[in-house]
Image (tube, rainbow over all chains, first blue to last red; front, side):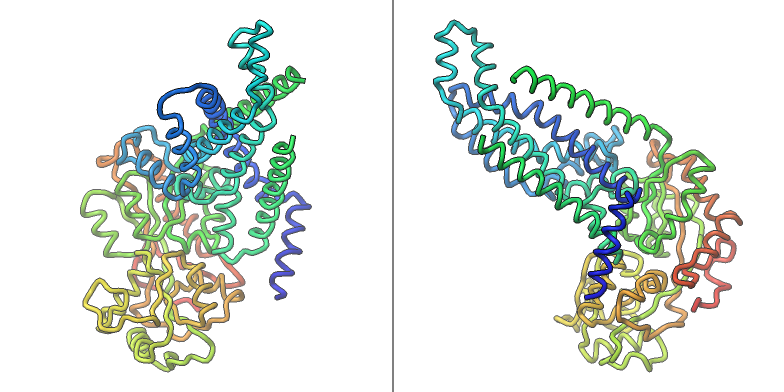
Length: 228
Length: 291
């Protein structure tokens, strides 16, 4: 039992003293997750908006597909992107495997369906009358769209946060595509996997605490936004 | 309100983009991808060996921790520039098939058979590694294998073969049972699992020493000639994969086998023990097994 207590004590010391290793790993995690979430949002939110606000054949099917993709296993995404980026793969000449960019691509594939699916539901939940009223009052299509986006802004933000939460905590894609390279592609989840394997519990616990804090924070934010 | 939000989001985006651009910019320096066997990572050897090299040649070394089998596969695909491995037969095949060039011996240590304190299979009294394994198999005592095609796993398979047993399958295998477990993980993780299961395990001495205060396993068999563990570094052939960072791979080979690099390896200690014996100039001989 004592090793656990010692581990916690040492972990808190590492965090409080802003240990450069802990800080560096956390920064890698945040940067890569933020970049992938940003790109996924830039594509996912408009996509979700246009799917939700338009009527077309097979709309139900498209929505089902996106909802199914929510369950995409991270290791399968890792495997798919790995086979594309490896030297033997079609995109091998870009020399991207084991770089932060490879992780961003993998995390983007993970975050995109979540953000899109939640954006669809966010827009669908906006009262139809908002758009109709805007149009009656003489708004253009563009202006009416802005009204709808504005009405659904909290739910859309919640969608983006859910995407971030998913990629921030996942280990499969990061490990397979990033290679867990120190100070470069080693993020919180891969570092925890490594340090536990190494028996360095203190560092693993410190990173685990940070990960938990961020995950809880994200979820509280998500809950608050959903209630708005 | 709406305008304020969009302005805030916009600023956030700009900030993030700037962050990402600067982070990518700072990694613009030359990079060398080294797939290194897990023992050299788990013990912290590379963490202490590489910074002086990186400084001297202004290059960043990206270490990918991978067992020998996986490291060789990464190299064959051209996904890394250089490998640090320990399985002679596989290394020779790799070089002979034209994937790698300039294999150099770097250092050595030895494998040990470790097991639980009470030693239910009585492996401790055996003269050599093969009879120790035979005793373990005979007693059906739990044995944890790397099972990951690593150098240690290769060595283990060689020993089982010599004992006329092949618990992992592959070769005709009489004893296959619940007592034999494959983890598919690195040395550190495998030792931890062996400890949890109170099982026997073949480990390299370096990782075992680094873990000795975390696991309750003790050394039961050591000193057998067969348990020699030779590490070597090989550059990926630029003829096969023109894009590889051949120059820096050769520099790293030069650095690790230079008197300076060899001295650093010999000086590297964990818990007061020397973990690796440099032997770039006398491969396979001249080592008294380290204790």
